[in-house]
Image (cartoon, rainbow over all chains, first blue to last red; front, side, top):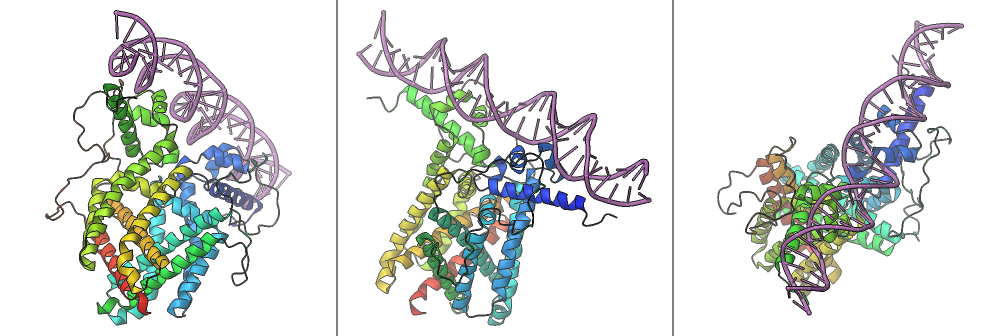
Amino acid sequence: MSHTSGVRQAQKAKTRRALMDAALRLLEDQSLSSLGLREVTRAVGVAPAAFYRHFRDLSDLGVTLVEECLGSLHHMIRAILADQDGDEERIDATVEAVAEHVRRYPAHIRFIARERHGGVRAVREAIAAELGGFADEVAAAFAPSLSPEGWPPEDVRMLAELYVDHMVMTATAFLEAQAAGRGVPGAGPRVGQGEPGAVQEEAGGQEVIGAGRPGPLADPREARPGRSEDERRVAATARKQLLLISLGRRHWRDG
Amino acid sequence: MSHTSGVRQAQKAKTRRALMDAALRLLEDQSLSSLGLREVTRAVGVAPAAFYRHFRDLSDLGVTLVEECLGSLHHMIRAILADQDGDEERIDATVEAVAEHVRRYPAHIRFIARERHGGVRAVREAIAAELGGFADEVAAAFAPSLSPEGWPPEDVRMLAELYVDHMVMTATAFLEAQAAGRGVPGAGPRVGQGEPGAVQEEAGGQEVIGAGRPGPLADPREARPGRSEDERRVAATARKQLLLISLGRRHWRDG
DNA sequence: AAATTCAGCGAACAGATGTTTACTGAATGA
DNA sequence: TCATTCAGTAAACATCTGTTCGCTGAATTT
């Protein structure tokens, strides 16, 4: 048996993370099927061959990234579903949470949006499966209040799918809005390729997961100067759409 | 001034079409940013350098494809908006039209879904602009009946965006369902690279635009043996979702 | 009939790609 | 202490990429 934490394993895990983070950052400007293995290792500062110690190939890396990116979304969804407020409050909280999530993990959302219908089958399927799971969860959360009102399970499911799809839609809309807020068209600050010599330096793993400009991280309830006009418009639209859906839901069983 | 149709121009147009069709077909299995220029010319049976006689680069080709793919969708949308039936009839007709469209032009839909958030900015922006135009059109179609009921223009717009996004969503769902119907995971019949010697043979331009298995083209009202279970499930879900949205729309102005 | 245009060709280019190979040397475990 | 494990290395590989160049020969114009 091998220890689950030695200096050895820790270093390996660190390099693995570095590869994932580098990939996630590179994937902000291109899609997975055009991402090069050497490109990733170069960004990390590691020999190309080292890649194979961690992933079979790039689509393997991609599937791993799916788990990570949708994992963080999963937490958010569960938090929302746990809230037991009224309709409008829940909607506000949802839109707020999505906006905040996109602000904190823009690279995650970009990756999902891009690869959901992207060129790599394994990744597509992983995303589809995960989103399907989300829909299950949403359906399960709504069932207790809907089933007694005469909603058949398939109708609950279609509502859940609508919610999930709308959430993804909203998230990507936020992403574009936030990108438009910053100066997007011009190239951002270039990242120097990591100094050769593997990933050894730098202390304390503090919030590595963002991997793409975590943003100001301002308190959601504070006044937010960094919030762009587009972003507020997206929020308002999403809120209204969810409200409209809620309205439809309330009148579903009475023609 | 040059004639708009000579033997010269006709040949050029033919090669151009061949390039676009080949690209569209290749893009069923990969994304634009990973598509190679040589790959396209090879599929057509033309020297790599010939590509530059028609497009500046691949993203130029991509933008052209956007116009074509969304152009065909545009026709469909206008046809739907022109119908003045009741809510349910319109919904049925819409879902039916989308299903048929996806069946006829799967490559078009795949391309749009894949590149909408893909790695090529110019293409992304072209798609966004075009879809925004669709939303304008839908909004304009709904305004006459909604404005008198007290709908502010921004609310009409948000409804239109919801409809457009839902349509795209439904189309890609159909795509996956139809793909699942056929044996997808296994590679389809391989296409031999075109015989060297440019694009000269083959008579009569009959429905070249499909560029990806136009399908049986069965009458929508006939019994359809080729319709998979998944496909029917997608249709049913889409119908219900649209119905639910309609319900919400009817109750929008009375809390 | 002669001059011009221009779509497509073939060759060459510098550079990048994924993958394999034998290796090194520090962490590990007996 | 000594043998083993194994993350990362450096080099070489065959192959592919986008782009430029001058050229050809048929369609076009004069």
